[in-house]
Image (tube, rainbow, N blue to C red; front, side, top):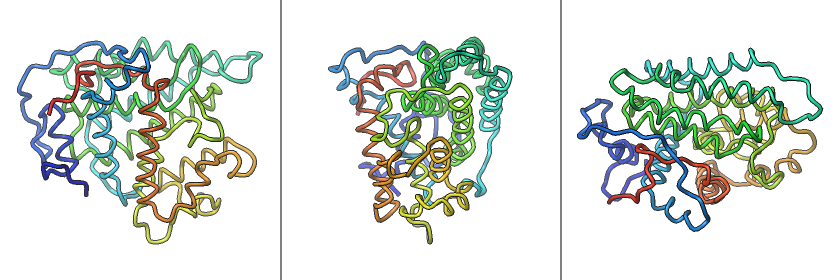
Length: 337
């Protein structure tokens, strides 16, 4: 359990900080103290020197708080374990099922280039048009004014329609989308496991289908030296799931038999399975960073190392954060202590 300097658990600290929509330690919704005025999020990080502004921002604090809260929430738990599934969670899964269905309705077109199938732009145009309506199905009527702001993060979370690429910045937009839903009180403290296991896992399935169907390019990939071409968060949360596992150690995830037998229980192994399906040749060659991680002695050390790496390689990199958008729910203003 992580404890903040005020003696609150990280979970309490995060959900208390989120605009006071929760009584810490409970899932009771309370009346927000002020009427929220929403806005369309926009880019604020325009040059490398703006990165200091991002790291001091309320958005950064809330985003990292959200990631770490969920990291604790899934610790030692299997994807297949029992957990509460609320109505908003079901609605989010239905939203993702709609995106999946649209892929089936928008087959790839014949084109000379193998990568970046232009049919993705047709698929994306539909999302661009329908995003606010989709978000409106998830949030209650009294929060309808939040839909345009929250929908921006959904639209940003599926890849770039010009370049037909996808990377960790798009994944971060989906986490930001979920974080915003927490901040307006749609998702609650006791939804934590379902947020990762039900919603984020379904998001990953849809993104993998997009990547395969439209042969999307990795955005800003470091190639063999990056952790993964497309994702990062499932490795963080997936390693947390495996902390204190009685049998599975980090050295086992490069064993094909172990992956095949356990991938349905653990997000980390599901990621490894997808990599081995998409790439050929020795694992140590096509996924060198992961190969090195398999030598780390414990899952808790893997988890801590991946959080540090995520901050350094994703959240502190200008090419990623220049695309992040800030609004009333994830503000660029400095943290108020």
